[in-house]
Length: 274
Ligand SMILES: C[S@@+](CC[C@H](N)C(=O)[O-])C[C@H]1O[C@@H](n2cnc3c(N)ncnc32)[C@H](O)[C@@H]1O
Image 1 (cartoon, rainbow, N blue to C red):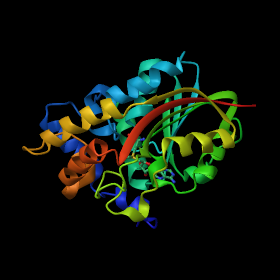
Image 2: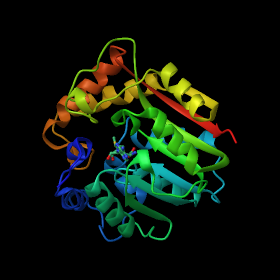
Image 3: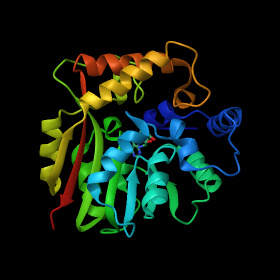
Image 4: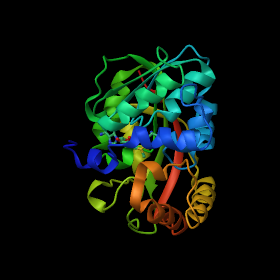
């Protein structure tokens, strides 16, 4: 039983079976999967795989890095980084069901030994100080109220000079978001900060900004396209399998929130200041 409202929001108990059944339905060999086979369903953030590529490119991975993915979900981004760049990635996530499914999918893609997952809270990361070269996080902080502590924890586990790669949803000037959205069915578990306030909090936590990119425009294009497909029959494989019954309303609201500037999206690369 999930005992945290954020975990309850994300938990769907039959998720692993549902995803494997959908993969079979689209003709995949579920014992020999690739990260590309899984990308429509396991990249659980605005913009999906293209957004992961957009965030990874300016990091300049060499393959030698030890990476931590905070709020790793079903593991799409972490498997992509390990598979594409050759780095070693650990994922940490609050939602036990996601950690189970991420581990199962990693086994089926033959990436065990290069990617691992554990359940844990981003506010109390279960890792030693200075363990990682890169901390990576996509669309997880919007469920986390205590950003001071979140970014201090991310800094703590980074080696001096290590880098933080973030894709985040930010509060826009247009007012509160329409709910439900993918990260919350109602406001009590949604904690958006403006881009300016996020940047200030990161700098106070001990980071220097290397790259800051407002990605609202491509995110809106992707959200509009997804909202349109959600009006017709849903594809066999997609993130609606994670969200279940109210996914169509979430996709519609995501596009509307971006259009009305209630939400914005940004990517940032930061460096840990010694
Ligand atoms: C929208 S999903 C994104 C998953 C993944 N980053 C991706 O892009 O595919 C948000 C994730 O953040 C996780 N999360 C939320 N609050 C967290 C916390 N305090 N500690 C760790 N994970 C958290 C959720 O369990 C969920 O898996």
